[in-house]
Image 1 (tube, rainbow, N blue to C red):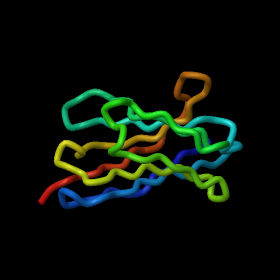
Image 2 (cartoon, rainbow, N blue to C red):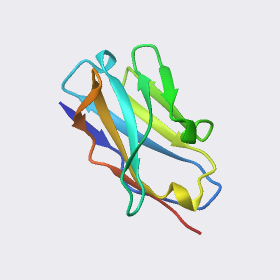
Image 3 (tube, rainbow, N blue to C red):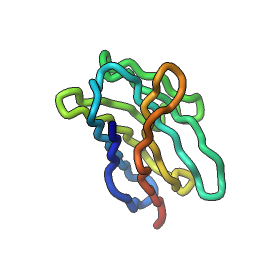
Length: 116
């Protein structure tokens, strides 16, 4: 099983960024994909999850309306899109396979830097 994320991104404030998480080695639709952020000097922060089988999503209140989770089952890839990013959006974004409430596989992380 592998989760491979897209590379680092640098964005100006107010723009959007989309991070991908390509899954392999298992049936993509059988597990939720959760997204977690780690801001500089901070702990891990749960952003939400997507069910790739039906596209159902759940967002942490803090991120509601500011991020969008999608999944392309034909490519076994999950995405998180951050809209109108601000400097507080800087951090490392991780995807993780949710195996009945615990994370058994993680992506390598994607550094997103928001700076003018």
